[in-house]
Length: 398
Ligand SMILES: Cc1cc2nc3c(=O)[nH]c(=O)nc-3n(C[C@H](O)[C@H](O)[C@H](O)COP(=O)(O)OP(=O)(O)OC[C@H]3O[C@@H](n4cnc5c(N)ncnc54)[C@H](O)[C@@H]3O)c2cc1C
Ligand code: SF4
Ligand code: SF4
Ligand code: SF4
Image (tube, rainbow, N blue to C red):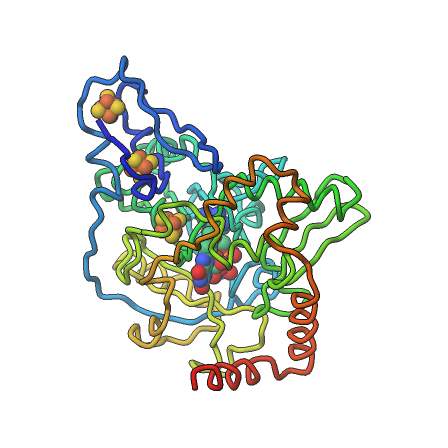
C-alpha cells in the first residue's frame, strides 16, 4: 500500500486512485488546496498496484531520437486564442478527424480548472490557453482506457506528471493514444486560484458573473509580456506580471504544489509524443516567425509523433531546429522551482485572512510596483523592452 511520507513525493496524478481494484483510494484536499490519495485500510487488500503505478516512485528517463521545431499556427484566430503559437490545436484536430476523443484542461461553470474530454472539433477552443492552476483530473484515466479499449483514437494533453501517471496506469502502449505535454514550470494551488478569483470578481468586476479568464492575454501588450485578464458583462480587469497578485505568486513560485519544488519529471526525454512550450526568442531561430503574436517550441519524442507531425505540418509556419539548440537554456525543462522562505506563511495566512488582506499582505501595490509597471509598459510600447532588459542583465552580471 502506498505511503506518502513527504508531500513532495506526490504530484497528485490520480493513477493510484484509478488503479485500485477495491476503490480504497480517494483523493482528498489538504489545507493548501491540493489533492492527495487517502487509503481506506479496511478496504485495502495490500495488492501493491498503487505503489507500482506511481510515476514519482518509479521515475525514469529513456533517451529518444527527438525532432525539434518552432512554429506558428497559420490560422491567426487559433493562434490569438492559444497561449503561444497554437501548437496543440492541429494535434487535437488530427484525432477528432478520426472520430477520436480529446482530453485537456478547461474551466467548469465556476471557473474551477478541470480535465474533461470532447468529441467535436467546434469545442477545441475550451482547451486553448494555459490555465496556471493544477487541474482536477477525476476519473479521466479510466475514461481514457475505456475509449482505447473501444478502439477509438484518444489525445490526452496535460503536464508531464499527468502524462506519466496516465501511461503507467494504462500499462501498455496503445497505437491510438497520442499524448501532448506542456513544458511545465510548476502548478499553482486551486485554493489560491479560488481565493484570487473571488477577490477580483468582488473588488474589480463589481461582483458580476465572470465570463472569460485569460492567464496570458496576448491582446494587450503582445505575447512576450504576461497579462492576466478577467472579463464580466460590463467590466474588465487586466494587469501585468508586476502588479497582478496571481501572476506574482506564480512567477515568484509561492503558490506551487510541493512536488514541483522537487519535480521527478525535469528531463529532456519526456514520455509524451509531443512536448510544447513557449518560444520567447523566436528571432534567434528564425526572424520571420517572430511577430510577438506567439510562437511555440515543439519536441517530437516518438516515431508515432513524427508520423503525425508529417500530416499536420502544413497547418504551421514552421522551422526545424536542432534539438540541442531548441532546448539550450530551457531551465524549466531541467530544474525544479526553488522553495521560497515565505511559502509556509503564505499558505498559513490563506486560511485565516480574508481575500483582500491576504493579497495585500503578500503583493502590495506600492509605489515601487507601480513604477516598475509603468517603466516596463513604456519600454514595450517604444519597442525597446528586450534590448533594455539584455543591457540591464549584462550590467547586473558585472
Ligand atoms: C501549469 C503550466 C505551466 C507551464 N509552464 C511553462 C514554462 O515554464 N515555460 C514554458 O515555456 N511554457 C510553459 N507552459 C506551457 C505554455 O504556457 C503553453 O501551454 C504552451 O506554449 C502551448 O501553447 P500553445 O499555444 O501551443 O497551445 P494552447 O492551445 O494554448 O494549448 C494549451 C494546452 O495546455 C493544456 N493545459 C492548459 N492548462 C493546463 C493545466 N492547468 N494543466 C494541464 N494542462 C493544461 C491544454 O489541455 C492544452 O493542451 C506551461 C503550461 C502550464 C499549463
Ligand atoms: S494496495 Fe491495492 S487495494 Fe490497497 S490501496 Fe493500493 S491498490 Fe488499493
Ligand atoms: S503521484 Fe500519483 S500515483 Fe503517486 S501517490 Fe500521488 S497520486 Fe498516487
Ligand atoms: S513541475 Fe513537475 S510535479 Fe509540478 S506539475 Fe509540473 S511536471 Fe508535475
